[in-house]
Image (cartoon, rainbow, N blue to C red):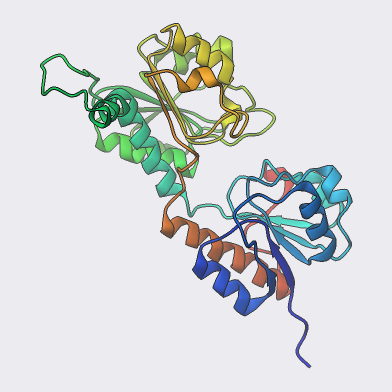
Length: 328
């Protein structure tokens, strides 16, 4: 007799090709609408399934994990970041955690450059003027932005995405600098013509553009706090496509309003969808709805990685993208 298929619960709508493949392989319960699951629904899924496939909108903390049945053996996260999952507690309960690293590198790096250009060249202001019908024609002094070529770009977090940002920035003629938990190998620095700064404070004080590309961990929470933000040059720009918690959003808002920082491009926010309302009012800020990874190709590749992780686990092997506490 064939063995019973794994019971898999997916917490959000996924691209149709991914859902179709899951139907073929597993006893899968798919989400009918795209609303996040309630805590009660998540708890029920963790009691009834062998595998759950959450996204960053699902907070799987110690309390939820404590309600899981012995049946749950894998949390196959749809996404690279796992700061919404208590990996330590899951491990203590014998539950594996996997993620989908690497597939969104180029998409997120593209969006980082898009935000840098949007802020420095004032694209939203131009768009708003066109949509309102206020534009009266070309003027020598209208909507003057700044040239990115020659500017110093400081990358905070020089992992896969940070290096992809460096590659794109170099093509625009920017000077690449970086701060990282560990210095890169000399050959990688040479490849990106990147200058390493051991002191984050010293780097921040000298950059024209600062790009946040590090994960959210206890050590990076408010890494860009009020004190460090005040080190930035008044004409500098900050861009964040990583995690909102890395920046003290209220401090950033105050400084942008006061003209102490020239502009910001944000795709992520400290409190999820609860964005500081004063931030929305500023013309020198570009706000996006966490769309850095929003390409059809990227989202399908994420789903394929999830499926590979589940299938490998079902075959009795360690998921290729297993996350362990030591990695965090």
